[in-house]
Image (cartoon, rainbow over all chains, first blue to last red; front, side, top):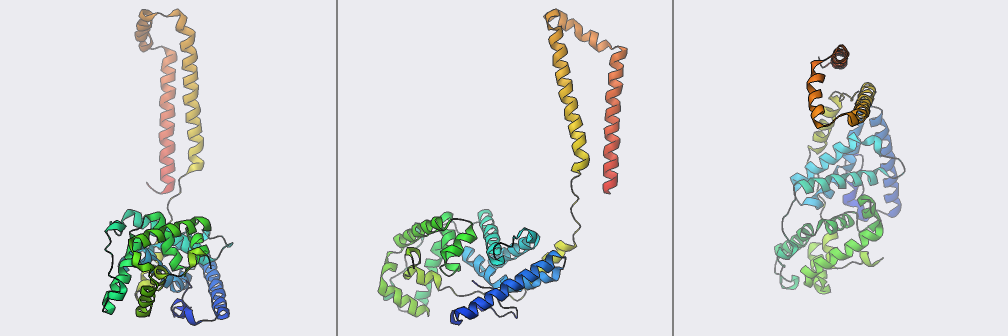
Length: 220
Length: 127
């Protein structure tokens, strides 16, 4: 997930149609802007933090949303993560990118927030199996199926839930998910496989390729 | 593409997540919190430099008292049986000039500690 452009336009929302070169150039510009803003913040310029907030508000709110599926709470958690980032700015070692550090910090904040006040207290076995996509007659039913599957992720045990959330947040990049969690890639892969197995056991019809295509087409 | 990134139906559903735009006041509310924190006075650091010598001194005193007490107790142990030990208690309580000196020294140390503590608190602006 890339930061929003400096003019406020979220690059993440138009990322799919960018060429790789343009994408890399945008990321490099974002990194330079982060570095410059961090230097100014550390020199005592509080307002420079505004640039960081504008660039990263979208990714952080979306990441928090995937952790809790509650818009208001997602904004609160993202705000807390940004305030903690401001407090601990001097702890960012320049070896890694600013985004890696920020996402890892945010994941810690979200994890501890959700430990204090869990979102759902439902077991995965209690999530209702949606009707088969082929039998659905309306877009609303399709949306409900998709929503049920996404919410089912929140019912997974915490050790499996977070890899799933971060894997899809990072556009299916295992390495990025592993860096955010501060774990080896192998561990993340193993947990992802286990999470998938749990979800597929609960929603067996999602293995059906035809149903998959229909769902994807309706979603599009 | 490895086994974890093979696309299937679950991938399609979970990856095709719509983007959520933060509310318009989000940046302002974050910056408000940051400015509040920036404007707040620095927390008073604990005065370790001043406290450590005192703690070391006090610990040294306690250890010395313990060692000295044990040494004297062991030295007197052969002379005492249970009955004479009980008789010694009132004798020790009666006090001698030497004992009075120790009491005065202890009071002096207490007074010194109290004055030092007041001075430290006064410098930190709490009084």
